[in-house]
Image (cartoon, rainbow over all chains, first blue to last red; front, side):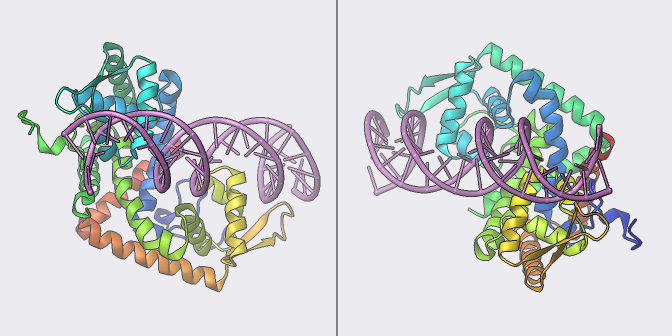
Length: 161
Length: 161
DNA sequence: TATTGTTATACTCTATAACTATA
DNA sequence: TATAGTTATAGAGTATAACAATA
């Protein structure tokens, strides 16, 4: 209907709206990309495995870092401590993780996944990776570059502290 | 303290946790990157200009697409219609946008920014782009590649509908 | 029947404040 | 004093359901 000719590279993926200035805003680009990955996560993990995004991330980080503490998780994810507590409560109630008292520091907790938790994390990762691969149609090279650039962005957090 | 040698490329930017399997999950990489862009947005726009992320995006999309409707905004942002209504209420109350009845379709509304709204959107974009540029230290080439790859990811939304 | 926009409502996510125990 | 973890609470973000007006 619109008679105005617009560069098709500057339209929103849905709704066909011009977004020229927003294309220069990385935060916006990330939000648009996450619409897609959120949908994938929801279809592949959230509903079938009953794991929410943060729960999946926390479970996987614990699986890869046995002996870690809630405080370190909070820093890694930029989430406040009270949220971590509630999150761990849920995972522990489902017997996906275990909290032990630390030997060195009696304030601190030592986290580990149960066998059930490790299995669930592995299954979830497998499903997400497979689904992202088939839905996104990025070449392995593009995937690698994207991961590297996003990590570089994420690391800007260090210098601003 | 840790005696185990870990590939430093596979650690979370903060908290120093191993994240090898999560590195393969694009949704996680996006979330980590957004911690940084969210902080930039908060410092540069949210507090000083009193504009929340979605408000900024909506305002800018309206500025670039005069004559658009709330329904198209909802599709572009994957946000439900009731949220768009509340969002537009706030922006209209601050006299940043105007809602007019459509001539063709009397159910529909025609959106446009006010002069004040256009100015605010321009100022916000300028501040974000400048801050992202200085904080992220990506080369122009990296910026371009990142934008292109994220857009490609965002466009996967089309094919899954 | 389907779509546009609205109201009312509820749920999730995440934050702050205040507290206890330990370092 | 500072840190680890908890509890209670509040706010922002976004969803569904039900509705009115129009196509």
